[in-house]
Image (cartoon, rainbow, N blue to C red):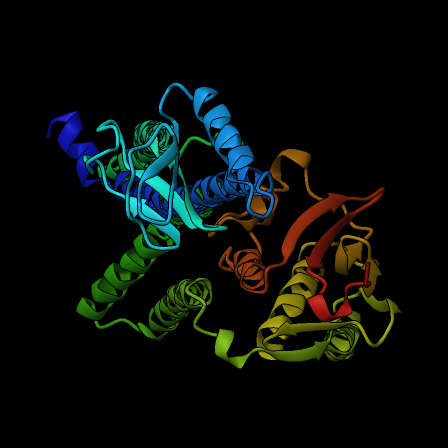
Length: 459
């Protein structure tokens, strides 16, 4: 498609044309009103000028003294040699007594004398005022020529101004529309690139903080989310290929051994029990993966309600206090101030804190002190599960939230490697962030929930 056709079919350009048409129409309406107002004002001024000239001549008349009136008429007629103002003084019988206008018969008051009327110059129409002065009839006529010239100049000015406004409006609209269209084309190009598999493509930001930048930011955020999900899927596929290959091979070997023993009529009950345990472990892994996928899809948001964060934390700690004690550790509840409300799913949040506590219990030595707390900070509502165990190497602290990822030292312990992945999925569902922060000694799992808008301080 040619650029001109593309521009004509673009919504920004059509909107610019519509706005330009609106501006031009508004200008024409305004210009028409101004023109009519000024034209009426000029006509009124002309009437005032004619009436004033008539009154000035008429005041020179004294009773039964026509001579002074004739002198005044001739004096005014000589002073208006350009035919712009015509004066006629006629007697009672219609004879011409003075002036530069042939005797005419006009009604008393104002009248318009059309162009080409006998006795008048043919250059323009006239505005005339006639009346009785004693026994005579006085007529003063003023040419419309100057008024028409001013009106023509005014009309020509409006026409040129309208043409300039129309040109600037259309040109400016086309320029602005082309800039907007380029930005929309950039969005379209980015989406085409994404559809072709280039998930790293992003819409460029111009930093103008306008609505298109706002939409671009939202689309880029969606693309970031899409990229992370696709990367997560790729990582899950890779992790499944690597981490589930071993238990599947082990299950295969156990079944081969059981089949061999069965062929020799040996007891296979132990092999079958071991195979059942391996299959149960594999099923648990897939169940956990499915649960994470459901949470990430937002399927549980319908169950959100207002919850007291401290109460949820305390209830989980109460359940796991004896579990930690039986495992040779201690679980304590730190500062937990009631009243800090969050919006969430109680069951999922219980699962989140339970996983963090179980993770601390499973991967720390006897005598470890574990503490769970909830508090309020400027950046949000914070829940922490801390321990004074061996901690996690700094290079591993982000990786532990990946699906099926397990530290080398924990591969010998039971588990699927999905506990912390489930924690992150639940945190993401609640708009929270979760991270591992080192302590001396130990590690702290920190979950930061956003403060609900109703609890934000008024400004």
